[in-house]
Length: 254
Image (cartoon, rainbow, N blue to C red; front, top):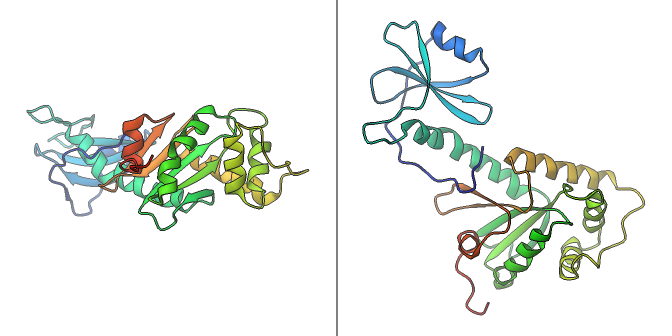
């Protein structure tokens, strides 16, 4: 569903048709697993529908005889992909905003200023070296009070990842435990509990569920909202340009 950088494509006129029965030809496409969202009016004069297959947008057109349906992309004479613009406007951007609400509300290790306008969420594994690099790179912004970073621990790299994540989350001060762990290069960590408390197990499971929902398969998987309120994703260690895109200009003292 999400790409590394989601961008708003130019949009074209969109009108919702009055509710009418879906023609049989379009119903046949629906039977193939495509969810029909709504009928829309697009340039070109053909009756058309917005649909979704799994996480991907689909555009469908009905031929003038009403007996045939076509699915695919619609382009104009300038080569603009008008279907993609529709998907961004009607599916991907709204879905990204809904997902951001869940990510931002998730119970994780929060560092920085809770009143900061810039919020960043990262999925991290205790054994991920790039997660450590990202944690260190974020320090100037965290210290400046301009950003709040919410780290959602997951267990995806090492058989001991869950044990380490559980120990950190069960510490009296998880943020300090995570900081100590990262600063010591994984050498300093709380003693793991004899058995993982149910609350911690459920929390780690929920973090994994959220990560699966984003489509990310590696850590760090980082999420933030840009100035247009579009969800952005960066997987792996960001470069300097990406860091400033998510955190803002680097503090002068950094």
